[in-house]
Image (tube, rainbow, N blue to C red; front, top):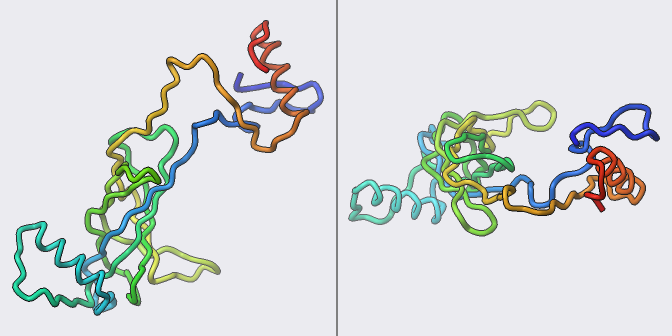
Length: 197
């Protein structure tokens, strides 16, 4: 089924180039985290950054008497990633880190453990690691955007069960009646029966 020869086409087309199985797709993940270790280029007086620092320090057993914490070495960030359709628990993936405060640069910073959630609010991965600044438009670096290569570890599998399915729906990348009819004809011819409609 992966290679389909259409008599109307001069060369073979693969089914995966024409369509995808409904329900098999990438999923976007997002999380809120903090980057530490900056050289005075962090947020400074942002209230949410200060609260994040307090929560982080309390989670590692440090109780603060003075709740007024300010540090230009820390920045609040949004962390984004794309979870591949068949990614499994234990696999790693790249993440993108974006400053959301008034930090001037994330250079030299380290992203602290950040849970990454899907649209259903379930945590699917956890990210942490050194932030590398990447090239933006025109080859220029954006000092407030960086990447952490292989910075997230997948903690939960996406629930995609195929073994008990009796039917699969294919979604054409470019919806077209002619292409749909050709795909149906080739599948049925190849399998020797009326399996596709």
